[in-house]
Amino acid sequence: MKGQIVFEYVIAVFILFSIIIYSINVLSTIVSGYHSRFLNSFMESKALQISEVLMNDPKNGVVKVWPQLDTDKMTAFDQTCRDTDGYMDLLKAFGLMESEPYEVYHHMNIVINQSTTKFVDCGRSPPEKMNKAVVTRFGVLPSNKIATMQVIVW
Image (tube, rainbow, N blue to C red; front, side, top):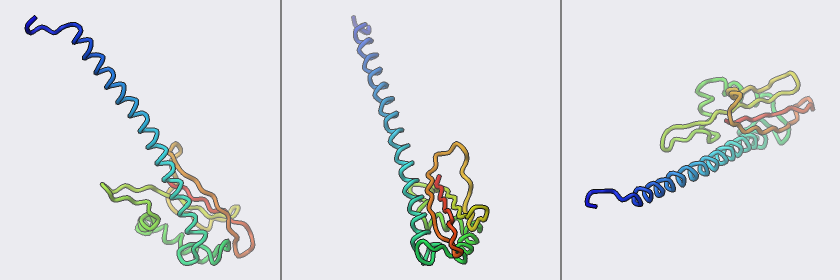
């Protein structure tokens, strides 16, 4: 029996490795689901945060007082966003850029319109089959018409 592998030992090793591989596969599937839900929650919270700042902060947002939208502030915000450096600065300001352990950022798209008139069209349009968070808010224009703000983060 010296130098020979016993058949029972081979079966035991096979069963052990099967259990280890199965456990790793199950853990990988579970962690993947949690990671996906975490990213969706993160993007939703960022979209809510952006819409909250734009609709409720007279200093940094596009309103005079809630819910009165200011056309001058919307025009200035749109011009800032159209500039490439301005868009990247907005990503940093809204916390959509992460630098640890390497630089990763999420994109955003902000549209403020009233029927056919677009006041703000900021950012990039999301791809069709991409996970994204969408938040819609409503505000009042100086002409007392309702405008829609849609914030998309992906």
